[in-house]
Length: 145
Image (cartoon, rainbow, N blue to C red):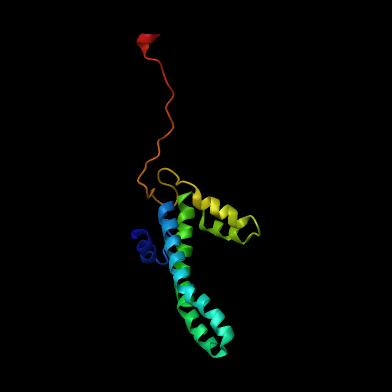
């Protein structure tokens, strides 16, 4: 639950990095809330077809879903940008989602990739894992020569 609340606390924070778990838990809870808000609309649709007077009530049921969707748009975008930062990509890579057929798949793969080890251009690793530097060349001790 901390990941979800943390996503809302960083409402429009596009800087820094977000771990995979932070991103996916935020998306999971947003999806659950959206489904809960949509269920009453789907229950009312067949009833409003039979009784046209209920159509206005159906519009009222759409209101909470629309408000939630508008409110969750900016934090969802911010956490996606931070997730892209975590793998070493610019937030502008988000726009690849608008490329038909492959853009969404590429973005999905990006969200599934592991964090870049160590700090990168966008900040320290949120996992706290430090990257190992390159191995120095091996030299034989003088007594072995």
